[in-house]
Image (cartoon, rainbow, N blue to C red):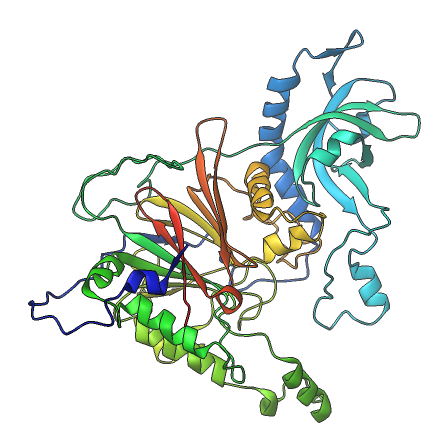
Length: 501
């Protein structure tokens, strides 16, 4: 970890230098944003949600069956050869077989939309719980497809992360209780990974081929490499000023102010800032109590309870940064965007000053994104040739409620190997009812996958069966940790900077 004091060194406490200063220029950002998670403007909500699972199964099942067939073809146990069955209901008692389908977790504490409707909670915000599993047990793991559902049992299931919505193949046999005794299971694993610069070419130079490694990475050239800064959980508030000084220091750090020339030269290579959700703070308990005292308006909206200060502070923060560094802005759970997944970009009307840096009206963002690029959550794009997938954390936070485990990097890896960035949507993660496509399926493997608004920083590199390499990054909430993440755009090595007073 590098602190702000480490970067500045003793450069702040010295006599003014008589040496001539040179003007520093920010490194250019090679950037392309994809609208893979954009919703249609005429979207409808009358349709059923089950189609999402059917689409997901249809897209991922062939890859799962290919992996399972390669692993289990000709497998013999007790003189019996494992055979493939096409549907869950085709499983026969005592027959060694394997089948692919969708996992469904039946858990005691998991919210139920039918119970919400029965208790007249259907017009309120989604109910939340710290976890869905019970300390007393009672969870059931089901495998289902369009034909039916069967319960899975076996000790091997305890060795894997399993949540509702992931697609797997299981090998075993049905017992006398009608349960499927699992001997082994397989995932689709990482999808094919595009080459670097697959969507664009670096400005004024030839394509560079650099492979992601944990250490001993050779640089493509001797020039200092660019960096991407990622921060999440800024949580601008109209009432809480306990860490306003750290926010000011973060702004000065990104601008390169109040640092010595050596540090400024290094920070000039930060070519882009990504803000990964929760830029606005969650309303405090005091604000909620005030609203309750005033009562609810008959038609819902109460203008007197609206506090414009948080969005004004965010607008000022962005408009100060944007003349010097481009910003990609993802919405989060607390931000002024739709609550269901995928969240659509924060409307530029919320940022009256900063919106002057967005792309011109009528011009495609994919062709020429503005210096301020409000994007969806999840978001996919290409930065310096690397395919990047990022979220503001709701998908990972919801998965954590299914398992009694704190290994968030392991859950991120599991999502990549399931080929699904939001498997629990729409069961426990509110989502739009897609009918023709399932955008949460990973069609291509990213080089960099980050998740924002997390309790602490973490990173690792995972490898796929075809040599795919993916850098996983947990981006901590700045409000809680005062930390920002820097990623080298040549090696994808990761460091964090802690802003301390």
